[in-house]
Image (cartoon, rainbow over all chains, first blue to last red; front, side):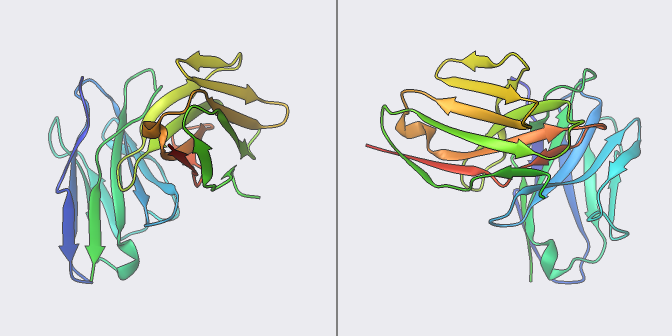
Length: 113
Length: 109
């Protein structure tokens, strides 16, 4: 069964550093998402991406965040200058053209020190 | 009022018993509803979509009540492996999912 993959599984970084989280969505999917989950809290929407542009973003997704699909397979989330409060699990998800079920990747656990 | 609300639990359930819990949503324009299962520190995994007429998948039954704006999940004949956090997710206009905080279920022998 096709699945969403994410790398790295864990990332530890110093406050103020840039991080790039990578995702490989399911190959025939067209819509891509990033969510985050701070430890002990709910899963929160960050951004959706379709046709090489952002289609929707949340208040969390400020100027420190950016997304990119640099090639036909990867989908990346960049945090330019990490803050302590960016520590969370970051999940990538993808959906097929029918926009039904969102399938989640295993997540990247980001720890900002 | 929170967009999507769930009783955090935990629901302590004897093995073999039935457990049910709800999820309420505030946006009456919500279009699609889902139950996801999340194990500790793992990704949400789709358990089932929730259809207007209600639907069943094995031991799991989901219902939607649009008038009262809630969905429910019922687990029959609970197994130890059903222990997890069950996330309710709602999609309104646009594609993003809005999640509840999850209901923790602990099935005990």
